[in-house]
Length: 110
Image (cartoon, rainbow, N blue to C red; front, side, top):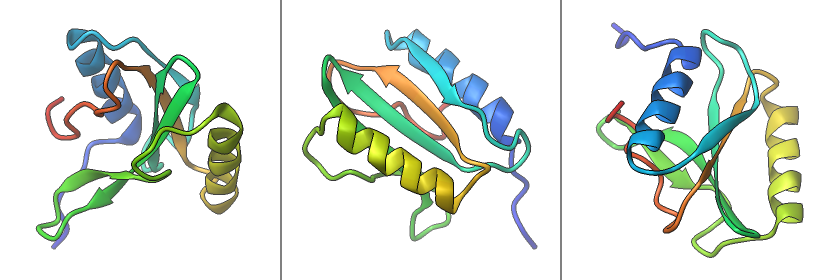
């Protein structure tokens, strides 16, 4: 039996509210499927960026995967990565948050 999940549109709203509570401003860059689309998070600090994808950990809980690696990258690399992901998953949501530390908000804390 599968675990019930919140619709992606609701999860995105919760993520933006949680980010706001911890001092991060954010925006939806691309809307995906409101019910079951995947979620890609882009963190920005000036011209430096990092992308995080949702994944399930060994216990089945949602977690963030540093999709572009551990070092910040530039806008061109992020754009290329996002474009590739959208071609693979046209239902993908892309959310960008301003950050001071490249640490995404808790994925289950919304």
